Image (cartoon, rainbow, N blue to C red; front, top):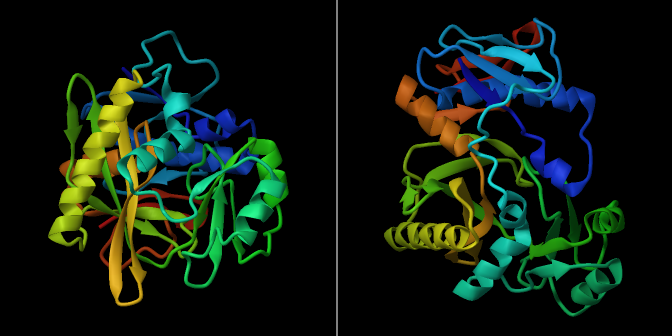
Length: 314
């Protein structure tokens, strides 16, 4: 028997917030994809955040659901539960590395109060954005949650509440994305890296899936991205972290030019990039998607009520 503890709400718990019961159920259902990380043909029990009804999620023809369990899991080694995970998943850890490497975006900084944010905006903190757009992200977030957007000196609703709740936020100018990319790997005695893959994100950065096909990076961008991923792995190693990790990056446009921002966050955990690669090896696919608009020819892995696709591969 192979046990999986699906703690996909971990960032919310570190932040000290709770997610809704419906979202906890959906996260539990989506956690079924973690079965791709287990040995093939092993019976799998997945310990989720909420009990879910039998019709809440069903499997597509090519996928087998694990046995869902809820409550306190049996005693076994939590191999992913590195004690340094909270500290190294803090966005400020990645920011310190970005500054050390000289890749910080103009205006990027940690903000600890609404007064500090107003002063930063008044001093041109968002000037690097062509339309003055900016984003503030909580130290621990996932799937595009716990962030607020603004433009120029106009504060988005909920900005002050987010700063007060999180204690600090990471401020960035919001730049016009050309391409969202990522690299996953493992930190051990050595740093093991996969090749870069694409992120399927919405206009506001919400996560929609993974594209394993080689992203449209220029040769220099590809090499720089892998170099920075390796440096991120070494930074995690120095901090004492051991385990899976990934970095997110993006290419953005500046007039007729394009630039790579090679590190916008470090995820010191299994990511859906790891899951997509495991599914790729198992099914020979190149895309893992979560948006309901499943393209022609794609195969559903998880179906919600009324046969609505929750996860698909192509």
